Length: 260
View 1: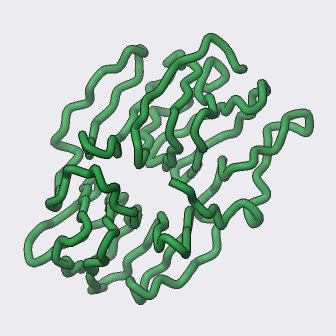
View 2: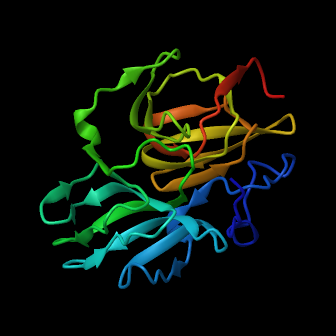
């Protein structure tokens, strides 16, 4: 999906030293450093914008909902909404309660849900174009805390799948990386955005054969285009890290022996 990345000119993305290249995509973004933006569809909130495409009306945000806030998810034709609760409590409709770790996918055409908070909440909020091959056409609402972590091929790395559409290949998931995990260089064939929910680590990107790494704390964000290798032995986990990640077309991933 073609995207207009509104942040590139604003973020001044830093590499780990003057000898490594600056990355031409938003990486190592500290969300708290971004300016607030206005969201007409969610009035009265504080929103930090990661990704935005005015033509497609899509975008992704971190949003702080104030105490006693009420609003609506809307029901825009051709657009779906994803919500992941980082902190606090969000109520959808009359009685669907999402605490921290709660996830909701509201597909195009579903009736708009009333949204409300009593004590406030912090959420990740994304508006997506609907893929014509999508097969999940009804709302998907779940508590990620009730899903078991699934081991991967890498010791110390596990994941939870929140949404996997067998038609479009769209995928939303959580990845947990423990200290001491030895990561492979991984390359995705689709663009991916990730947000560090908890933990701290030095995470590496491989760009044009050079390793670029920086320290992440909770709230760190990255939008990585397809075919960019990342991870690798240069990544050092200091405190168990949990990433929330999204791909709109999960074409597949491959591993590399080194940064190239």
